[in-house]
Image (cartoon, rainbow, N blue to C red):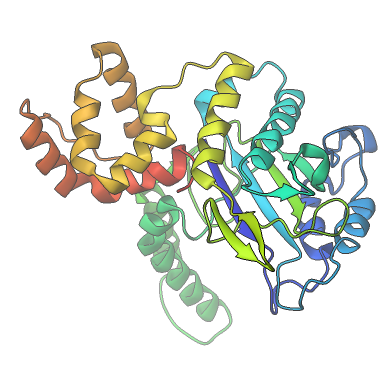
Length: 343
């Protein structure tokens, strides 16, 4: 599970309205019949229109400054192992989203008029998406880049020759392009992976847009607060503040596991990935102490996350901690991002 929480983009990319972001989330519905579309939903309603989402989010921004985010975005990316546990992906992910948002409000160290925040205090809309495309930041694109650059150069030469601006053997160049296409290290269905290519397999994930203000348009509820959980004196009163991301991410896993009966392996847990960041030696020692079956699954998860596991793993835990850490840290960081909740 990989979950991100990001504020509304300000500046040239997005205006003060949510219309551009909501429009972006409608991209998969283009060209589909009404019954084929995935609609927005919230805690109690389904088939909510994009127009209603924009109206509700844009109309819930009282007293927010021009440079303050008007909404936040949560993206929930279940792993392929988690997705396999679902019986009906769209409906199951809707069910999970509604439980997840209860975890979200419970992670605020805030009160509204002396009571804890509840699910009815937030204004959010969610949408299930079924496709993903390769981005420039994906390791497959980065590692294929040298081949892509050579291919582009050859295609440019061919075009120059065809338009009378150059000379050369076009047939030979086309053969070289075909060779480079085959040699690129990352392929999908027999084709070189390139930026913008649709990813194969089950890519179901969830996008959630949440108003910065509470449902009454009175209180500001920011999951981006720098304060984790604290109290401060304001106007002579003790005020609780903050959002506990650790609590939210841990709860997100537990809620998924409980809802779908999922048996989460050590390598998939937020706690383990965070341990790697804080103390890699303890992370690797804990990995090697797992029962044989669980350790095998954990190593498989890491390999499939494109972590370059050493051919022979040292028996000594000290050796393991040092050698694997020095050789694999870069790869493990990829796994942290691609197969677990973001830290």
